[in-house]
Image (cartoon, rainbow, N blue to C red; front, side, top):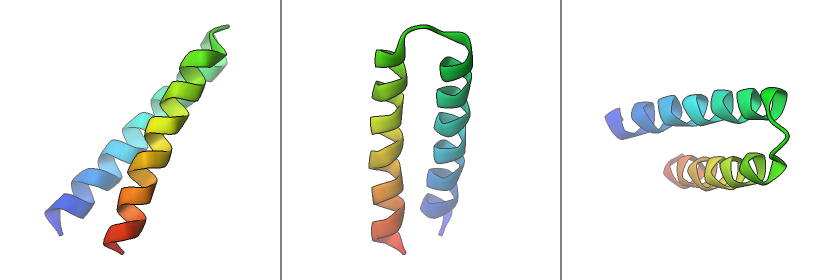
Length: 49
């Protein structure tokens, strides 16, 4: 259960980072990299559910 909570927190942190980079940068490659990392974390969360 703790792992799931930590994973959810990490997902939220990465989501916020992606949003910030999207709003403040012209480097959309970085947004894509962050998005892919977020996708991987969401998949892990889905596997745990």
